[in-house]
Length: 424
View 1: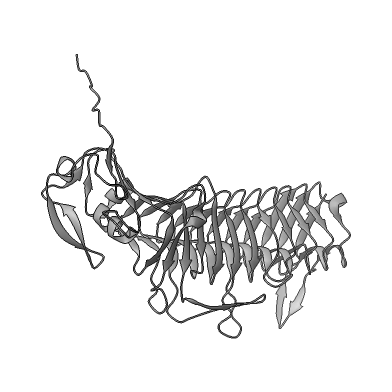
View 2 (view 1 turned 180 degrees about the vertical axis):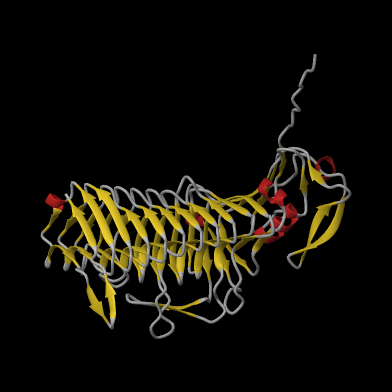
């Protein structure tokens, strides 16, 4: 009969913020050597170096083995973990200047966590001081690399953003990095106590990358193109997150600035999240991207009623049930083959239409409230369509009326069919 005996590991505490180690370095590692990682020297185990039990390192300003988070990170990334064992880097309260990304190109990075103050993340501040003109990121996982967990930190990008006003944000050239960037088959896990400020992208999942924050609690402010972007089959899971202040008005006529976006086959889950102060839209999908955005609250555009609550284009799709969009130019703009499901949504007090569908776009929903908008409740043109059940009685008090549906006609020598509305 085969029997499985569990391996029992005692907790090893390498107290990089206390007077002594609970166990010696030799007890944890098979040996030491020096390896170059991220252009810095880090002490690392040799042939084969591994951690064979849960290990905690702490970082503080004085009296610690590690006095800065990057040195501790590089050392942890140089270690091979054994089985399910983890390395936790605990960072003491304070402000730390960071000059290069926290990088992972190894699957074993999934065993490394960096934790600040999970009671008050404003007390652990990382200032990324080398992102202007370098396109550097804050945390960067690539080529199959993983990052086990980041939590309890306020991250500030320094120098990428030039200025921010009520109507726009300007950015320096080649300063387009992300606070968190997962590229390729890589993964970054985020905790519930994080703030990401003044990066061109707050979080970016690209080319199949995955950023996971399923329990929310992540706030992102002052971005350029997008706060949270999933593109090229990347995925972001960020239920209960918050995004605000996003625009790039550096160049005349710029049209960048979404709180959340999925494009080019990307997928984003922002169920229960909030968005506000965006130049283009709160929830945006493009070119086959899909957004899960039920129970979402859109609180208005940048500098007043500008941009759109839902901005769905070019075969993008969104599931937006039971959400509210107030204070935009248009509550939902669906065009160019885009599709939106708006079950139980509310579009209220937007400057123009509550819902505008054009150029083969399609909207479906049940029990939708469309009220107090400055244009039509629902406006259809360009061979678009909408099917809205149990909505007729709540499509009310819109300045131009409940609905407008474009009939068939000819424009610029081309004939077009009528748009279609079923409003029950």
